[in-house]
Every structure is written in C-alpha cells, then in structure tokens.
Length: 184
Figure (cartoon, helix red, strand yellow):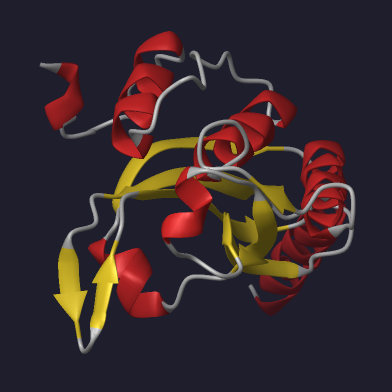
C-alpha cells in the first residue's frame, strides 16, 4: 500500500510540474462619475484602466491602474492644451469607480499596453487637451491595444464612452455569472 501511494504521489508531482500554472492578466476599464467631494477635492468624471493578474511567461504579479489627466487642471484647459500626466488612482478612488468591462489578455498584449503607457508618459504623448486628448482618448487607445472595438472618442462623457464600449464588445457570460445591470 505504501509503495502504491508513493507511485501515485510521484505521478501527481510529475503532472503538477509538467502542467504550467494557469496565469492571466485582466485589463478592466473603469469610469468615475465624479462630482463627489472628498476632503477639499471635487472629483470630475474620469476613465481609467486597471491591470491585475499574473504573467504567463514570468509568473510576475501585476496590479497597476492608470488614467490620463491634466497635470495642472484649471479653466485654462477649456481654451488651450496643457501638460498631461499618466496618473495612478488611489485604492479609494478605484473603489468608487464603476468597472464597465474586463478582458483577459496574453503576455504579448500586456507588453503592448506597457508600450502604450510609455508613450503616454513621453514628451510627445503627454499633451492634454480637454476636447481631443483626454482620459477617454487614453482609455480608447488601451482598448484598441487590447483588441477591442472602440466607439467615437468625440465626447466629454467618460461613462457614456465606456457604456458604448461595453455594447460594442459583448463578452460571453461567465459560468454562474450574475447578469450585468448594463445588459438591461
């Protein structure tokens, strides 16, 4: 009996070592409705992305979130461009956000998204314009990089953009999934 157990354990150990662990990174598109006052700050509507999971190739853990915004917000942005910044929202801001769409991506797409992040941080990529190059433009760029179909970016409603993104990219329901309120 002990010999049989040892053989079984050896087979199990070999199988576990031979079968790669299932790893994946998920990119989620968030919207923040804004108009909430926390402390002395008024939050404006905003779109941002969050990547979580584990890379297949390296096993590296991923947990990052970014949105593109003006470095120096103010009324001047109604009339002119300014410097933009790829900003990382804090955990409370993410918790207040609405997760509109999540999609699992492979390692190559993850690295392509990292390259887009680098572009948005670069000198040529960091120009902010409220009407033409804002958080919606950023979210659309990342969505296209992830292989999604994007709606028109010609809007100042991040949540409206994200609702249209969901409509254009219906995801098959997960097993035992609760229906989304957006599906109605």
